[in-house]
Image 1 (cartoon, rainbow, N blue to C red):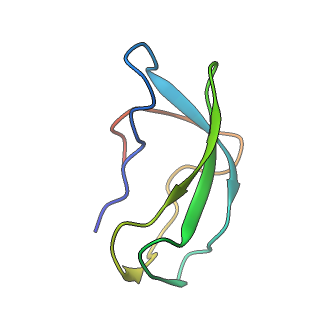
Image 2: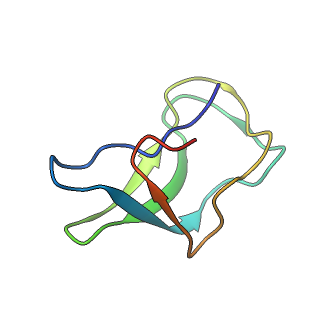
Length: 70
């Protein structure tokens, strides 16, 4: 399962990862918070929608990713 940077508003094009709650190799279940993102309009925690294992982290804390990025 790929985790995508969510769309947080019609005009929001990117978000900054401010914190990861899970590490690569951790098991996750639906509802577990994966990471926290910050945009120019909001800050929010993003939960997992499916169970699985977080195999890798491609966007590190402090980095910015466009909406829809894996």
